[in-house]
Length: 177
Image (cartoon, rainbow, N blue to C red; front, side, top):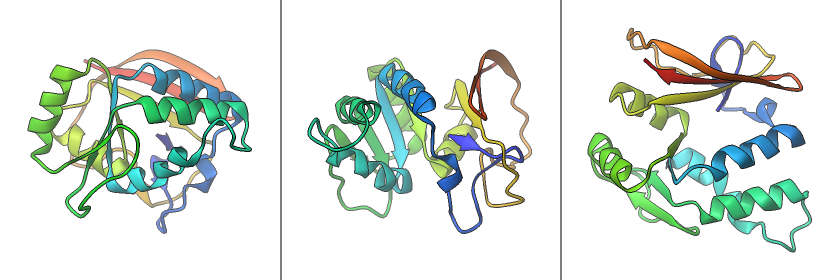
């Protein structure tokens, strides 16, 4: 996820337009997501990402977007939602059980699982289910909105594994100690 310098992923009204990746960063996302064995995501991100189901080889989009669509469709996706009755999309399943139990079971089946969606990520953090953070920081101060990290008073010590710069976006890869 991309966050502002002051730690928010969306404005108070939910705007994430400032997070659109450059072609170079998009290709990096292709690499990252292509290395995952599965993705867990919340309802809101599932709805945003459903756009990728519509892109195919004939779509009039840049090559890197067609490549991401193919990667996304091939990736097993698990949507955690209490409000959806069903999900659509290639390799997409609805999950309604206990988050900690379900993610633990998924970790037995998949070696590398990406977590998408701020609220779902916060819930995973609360259950100590996230081993590594991949943070993208954009050059903006939002002054409020939806925070990247929950403010639950818990300290999480991290080890910096990697940094990269993409135009004005800085990437940090961090592992829990």
